[in-house]
Length: 224
Image (cartoon, rainbow, N blue to C red; front, top):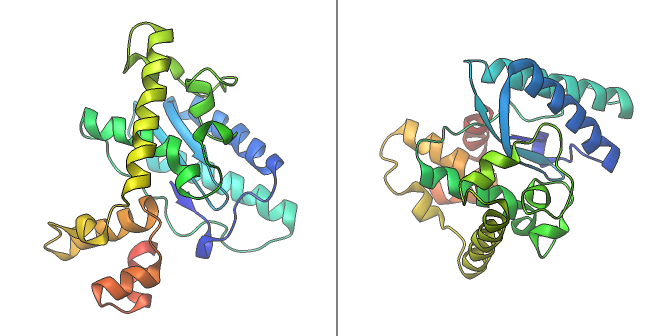
């Protein structure tokens, strides 16, 4: 995922999101990635991709630089549109994979943009659930196959899976204590800072207060 500098918007209108899709399709084709889910918010985006070669950094640099150059050219901006290097988390097991799929679908709800994931046009939820067209760069069959070999059954299971997560998230937000549990050294702490900021939308001020750090120190961690 990548977030706008100081959490500023990186998509100002729908044409910006369509432009991003065009860039993403080119990058996925060029670097031979597989894309399983995505979500474009206002000030950040999420991608779940599988790389078949060691080219994630190269592809993300191409994606972000090409989009940001067009963004600045369109709006007359200068400097960095996105905050630092992209953030990535390696999927190491099936449970993590499934939670990432659900998290991406629910991001617009968690961000307060819509009440239900199907109301957000700019995520893969509608395509996976059969409510909307499938972009050329999205591998819907892989994601559905995680739920069932039958597409109709898989779509129903996917809808229930996401709905269960919505109910859970409405009942409880992951606390900072839970996120930082087990972070016993600086490296683990810094990873937890990234997770809290990028995945759970805690602010730098909230993190600095909880960790008893200077806000600038938290900013340096997030920019590294």
